[in-house]
Length: 309
Image 1 (cartoon, rainbow, N blue to C red):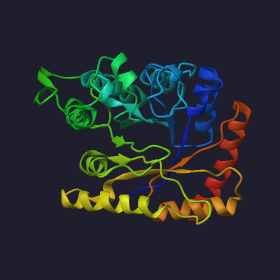
Image 2 (cartoon, helix red, strand yellow):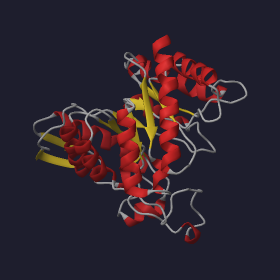
Image 3 (cartoon, rainbow, N blue to C red):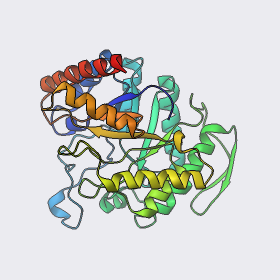
């Protein structure tokens, strides 16, 4: 995990309040303040939650305003110059793999190599049904999808024969700037942030980065023991498979609201000591003017921390 510590913010709140115009203003301000990445939520369709009581609880419904993530990143690539784009997260098994490869390559090409593709297997079987994809096989299928994506992003011509994919003398052109585009994996739920062992193994074997829902315990100022154990297990499996554990990017959320600057800097230092490469600043759900104020306040703390390293 070499390189400078990065700082990510997310625009998920704007699916509930403000929509397109507010999110664009938020991204412009984040770039001006020197943030490294904007994290963008992905849902193709919204659901009427009351009609599907079998689904896990979700804040995202038919009332949410979802910007189509690849189209929106394409737009942002034209009005920004340096901030990176992170899908947080793309429901990869819901989508056709070659189409994702093409869309992601196009965004990366137009933005000059500013894309990280954050993916997950999804939790909403209604969404899978609406998109014509199988829900039960999504875990195994995503592993093959990752192989296909990397092949299409790095090879002039691809031939691939798998369980779910058959590619015969095909390519995507233009290729992305990054060859391949980094693939990060998200996993877990707010109520159960540590993923099961099968998912931990998948992350260790296939991911360039991990974006868990772990958070620092406000009372102890530390990650929970099971979260630390999960990170250690991922690194152990990576080494077992000949992968350098230090090559795995790690993004963990930081909740600075209501804390003084000293406490926030202590938490940043702690996360960095645990191998975190990307600090994901999470702000309360507020209207745009307050979100901008949060951005500015945290940027000042970030700059103070970086200056003192």
